[in-house]
Length: 271
Image (cartoon, rainbow, N blue to C red; front, side, top):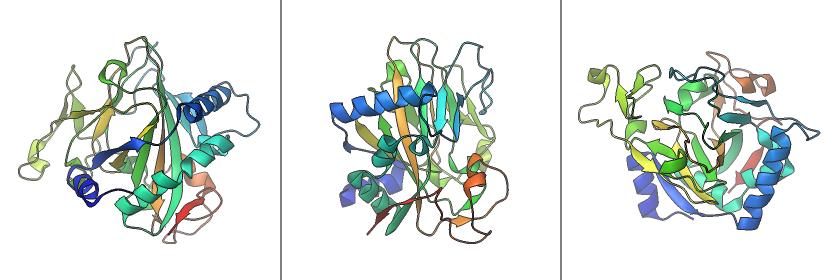
């Protein structure tokens, strides 16, 4: 369980680091499962299994042809091990604390793997604007490192307090040395500082971030792998409110305005 101080820090900054929640053996099992899914060797398949960059980042950064970020969406659908991970009691309890909810569902999960040397960047973004079929914007993600995620191999960086700045889709830019900036800073709240801090996470450790927090990760030019699994959790009051399209739309069985539920969005926690 998180302390009151940790919850206050999350409310202030939009992210916090949790504990190491996976043993070395548990990490090894997830790595093995990840290899099987990436190679297409599982009977069941995820929703997406692709190079996120494919020559051009969806966050507007120019990418060389060799740069790669392997993205797998809903690996839990292809792997019972990853579904068990998404149901991790400690992780779910702590996300429920941050969401102030007594029920959690999986919205979707996401692998992002930056291979050694050619691992590409993930540009500055907020998660929620990429999810134009759900409301309200109060989801929390649990990001667990399957390798030490450090500055050298492209760990995430966060902008403290940015979850309070509203939807800034299309307004986030990056300098050549991966510092974020707002393209129209006069639109930001008075006193807002666009300054990023590294979010280094140990192997097996969890980090939590709000769905509106600005974050991104630079290239992995090191000899180290950078594998991670993020589970994006929806509190029990999340509604299906489509104003655009999303890969998870095909799994939705409820009507607009109704609570998001169904086999594609399993409940993993009830208080």
